[in-house]
Image (tube, rainbow over all chains, first blue to last red; front, side, top):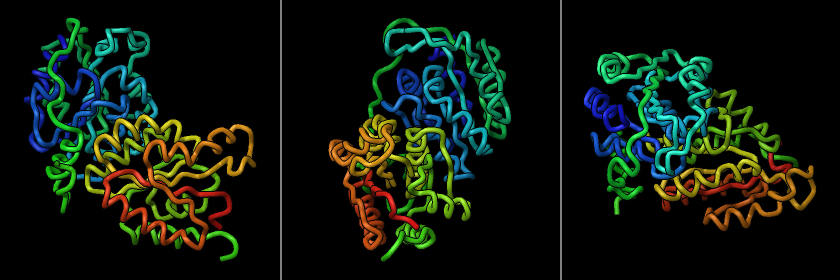
Length: 196
Length: 164
C-alpha cells in the first residue's frame, strides 16, 4: 500500500465538513490530488507543525471535527505536540500518521520509525484511542470507525515507500489563498483579506 | 508608573483589544501575566515555541486572535514557523517575547540572543515595540491594529521589570 493507495481508501470516508490539516512533503500533494475541499489546508513548509495547527483548530472550534494527515518524519520532528494533544485531549481531533519509514520528498532517507513505533509513542502519551493498520483491507475496514471516534485518536497507517519522485503535482493554491478559504469554510466573519 | 505594570490590567487590555487565544512557553519576565492567564483558564502551555506558533496558527484559521508568549531564546526555535507558516500564509500572531540578555546584563546563555533580538525581528520583518510600563496598553492596541491591517506577526518585547 503506497501513500496514494492509502489516501484513495481513506479520503472518501472523511465526512464532509471535516477540517483536514495536511503535513508538508508528499502528504499534502497526494492528499490534494486525492480529494480537495475548502476545509483542506496544505502545509508547504513548517515541517512537524501539522499536528500543532490541527490542535489549534480543534481547540478553537470544539464542535468541528479536525483530522491531521501526518507522516512519520513530521511526527518525529514534533513529538512534543503528541504530548500536548494527549494532555489537552480534544475530543474532536483525529490524527493519522502515514508511516513509510522514510523522508520520501527529500530522497527516501530512512527515519527511525522502524525502531520507534509511533503508535506506541502516541499510546504512551495518552491518546484516547490508538490503532495501527498495515494492509489495504484493514484500512478500508477500519477507516469509517476510526473517523467516527472520540478523540484524541491516532491511527498509524503503515505504507510502502512509493516510487522515486513526487506522487502528485505541487499544491495549486497560493498559501494565503488556503488561509482565506479555510477561514471562510469555518465561518470566520469578515474574512475578505488574504485572497488576492 | 513606579514599579511594574499590573498583570490583571495587562490581560484585560489584551482581551479588550480582541486577543482571545494564548499559548506559549514560560519566561520569568512574564510570570505574573502567565499566572493571571492561568487563573482565568485562558492559557495553553506548549512544549516548544514553534509548536506554540503552530497551535496559534490553527487558532487563527479557526477565527481566533492569538498571542504566543515566549522567552527570546524561543524566538530562535520559532524562525522556521514564522518564515514558512505565518509570513508565508499571512497568518498574524502577537509574539509576546521577553528580552533576556537585555543590555548584556544576564546569565551567559542569554547574551547572544539578547544582543541580536531587535535585529532578528527586523530581519524577519516583524514590527515590534519594547514599551515601558506607561506605554504598554497603547502598544497592545497598536499591535492589534497592526495585525488586523497587515495579517502579519507583530511583537511586543518585554524588558526586565515591566510587570509587577
